[in-house]
Image (cartoon, rainbow, N blue to C red; front, top):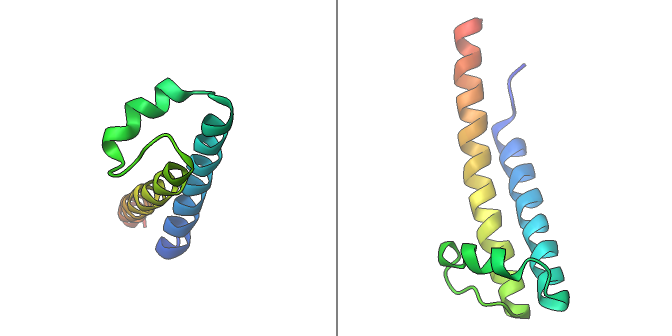
Length: 84
């Protein structure tokens, strides 16, 4: 069964962005996982540990999730062609 490239990529992007949004928001509000988020800050241009950083982090994780979803589903579908 082939994966729908657009649907899989968009689903991965939404889950990545939403997960990052929740994690960063909880960190800003409670201080939970602040050290971890400071480690990933170099990969998110413009990120700071603030409320605006919540949206910046979610945006970048959406983009990274979209790219990962496209790559994974493309590779999966290309390996599947070899079996058919």
